[in-house]
Image 1 (cartoon, rainbow, N blue to C red):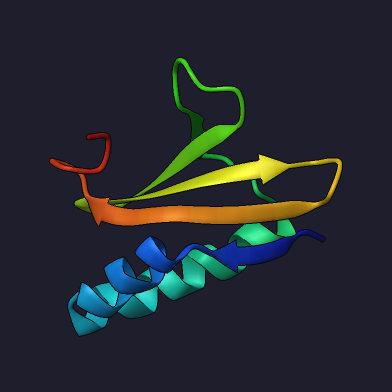
Image 2 (image 1 turned 180 degrees about the vertical axis):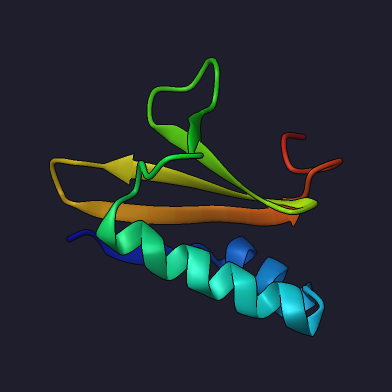
Length: 84
């Protein structure tokens, strides 16, 4: 089991989501505590520990630290701007 932390930018991103997407995002983020690399998650090319999970038109970008057993959610953004 991993501990999940949200960066301030991710918190702001969550607050900006439409209601139904907000609920989906919260469920996906909670699932990261159980298994941060569940099927469907992809490593972001060119990074050491950054991952992403698709959520419709949105992406949850997060970092996994296995030594500390933590997941840090960096951003929750629309797919068009998630990687900028």
